[in-house]
Image (cartoon, rainbow, N blue to C red; front, side, top):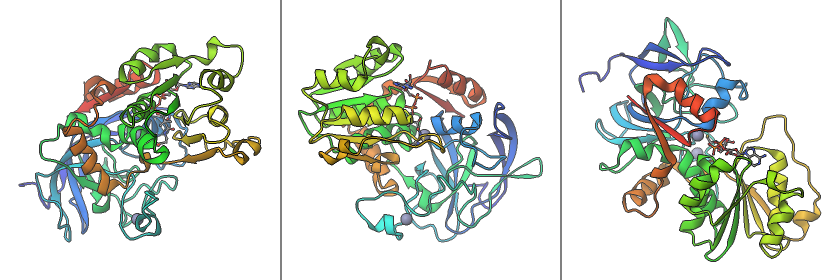
Amino acid sequence: MATAGKVIKCKAAVCWGPKQPLSIEEIEVAPPKAHEVRIKIVATGVCRSDDHVISGALSEVKFPVILGHEAAGIVESVGEGVTNLKPGDKVIPLFVPQCGKCRCCVNPHSNLCYKNDIGKYNGLLLDNTSRFTCKGKSIHNFISTSTFTEYTVVDDIAVAKIHKDAPLDKVCLIGCGFSTGYGSAVNTAKVKPGSTCAVFGLGGVGLSVIIGCKVAGASRIIGVDLNSDKFAKAKELGATECINPKDFNRPIHEVLAEMTDDGVDYAFEVIGNTGVMTSALSSSHFGCGKTVIVGLAPSSATMTFDPLLILTGRVLTGAVFGGWKSKDDVPKLVSDYLDKKFEFDGLITHKLPFEKINEGFELLRNGESIRTVLSF
Ligand code: COD
Ligand code: ZN
Ligand code: ZN
């Protein structure tokens, strides 16, 4: 490409600080260094973690920063030593990288590579610098990705090559929301055919858990949400019943126990609320129930529960990015999508041009959208 090796000037949404709208700016994106890849982002989703930074809830993130972590794009150029990618390849950036060498990467049961930037939020590439500048200031990276920009640079362990026929405005959801929910059901819980599931929280990720439970052959999938407006979409995607805790004057785990002969086989917390995590655990069967925590609770929150709950055999676990080993599994998920093993187009409720990114966040905050996909 004519731009290879040169600084690219392009449009990006810069987050200058918490509690203010993102600002569309012209930025400079430096060429990729060794083992880095510069990507032209084609489509990017508006996701919860980005909003947590904007609202100030993820206060550890360094500013200014370019947010965005759920996206798909095309390789523009590669740095030295990158052998498995070339300009023109379709790719998905990975907010959980896969170095292939660390203790987690070599363990088949873990997917949380040591090179991830979640929780630490250094906001830099692996060489401890950033490729973004705006108005003479260096701009931080976000969880190894930064996709709210026409061009980004990522480390080569944080990008997966995908099938050439993949529709980028759809498969961008495989970069976060869809895979997180779907994998929680099929990898982390390993939902069995004929089983009973309860999904707490019917946002984009909770709905993706429902898709996973259905693909795995669950016979009952019970959606739980304080907002009954979420029920229609949940049923469309596979929920067999939906309940609103507000409609009962007793704890929701008692209601679920009655509905399911003493408790569900699998319970999923897809909100990030420690009270709901305990409810989910209590809703699972005392002898054989498994509870998966998907939501991220506020950093100061703690969870307390009677240990008898797990002494009798309940299992409590969790996963980031649905337990997928990102670089290995994202290309397979894209192929499975192309082969129609599952469908998630119904999660995309809104499409907006990139410039309307703040509108996309408004739609997420007021519960109007499941997913808004932004295109450049
Ligand atoms: N009881 C029942 N339902 C509730 C309650 C409650 N107490 N509180 C809120 N809800 C409902 C809301 O009405 C809403 O429908 C739903 O719960 C939450 O939906 P969203 O749209 O806020 O969330 P999602 O599905 O987009 O994301 C949920 C996550 C839990 C994944 C997310 O918020 C999170 O914690 N992310 C961090 C963890 C992670 O894996 N991140 C990956 C990058 S995003
Ligand atoms: Zn996300
Ligand atoms: Zn690793």
